[in-house]
Image (cartoon, rainbow, N blue to C red):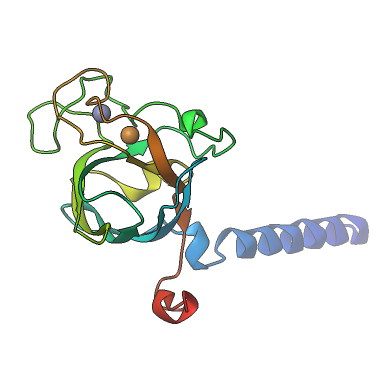
Amino acid sequence: MSVRFTIAAAATLLTTLLFAQNDTVSTDDVKVPQEAVVVLSPTQGHQVAGTLLLKQTKEGVRVTGKVSGIKPGKHGFHIHQYGDLRDPQGKSAGGHFNPEDTKHGGPDAAKHHAGDLGNITANAEGTATVDKLAKGLKLHLIIGRSVVVHNHADDLKSQPSGDAGPRIALGVIGLADIKQFNVTSASK
Ligand SMILES: [Cu+2]
Ligand SMILES: [Zn+2]
């Protein structure tokens, strides 16, 4: 074996090892995501605020949190296709997340969009406590999309989106390390 060949082989081996090491980097943001956060922003003319936490569970994605600054009663609440907040009315978020190309419905209906989470209900002070389960959903499929709150109730049957009226708040579903960043202390 020539010296030149040996050096070339050694260089190749070194490169392979370096890249192999890069391939096995183990940080949370390259694993299949288990948790995410949504910070809601109001659309033009609205005063909505809220933070939602999303967690992957065996049953699906659990969505918890609070939404304030909405009128008392029911408000349509969905995962929309895009995490695009450019439009002041929230229209750039697209329609309901619907990878199976099915019809709109309530989350417990036999057929509904994957993004159909039904309604959240605000109390007399205009605050809704959210605790929803998107059954069967995988969190990694919705990272980079959005959660939208509507001004009216989702009737769970009208097509294509439950007749829930204008979008009053929305936020992007972003990767998060919930334990490391305490939302309660951060929101003070
Ligand atoms: Cu919606
Ligand atoms: Zn829908």
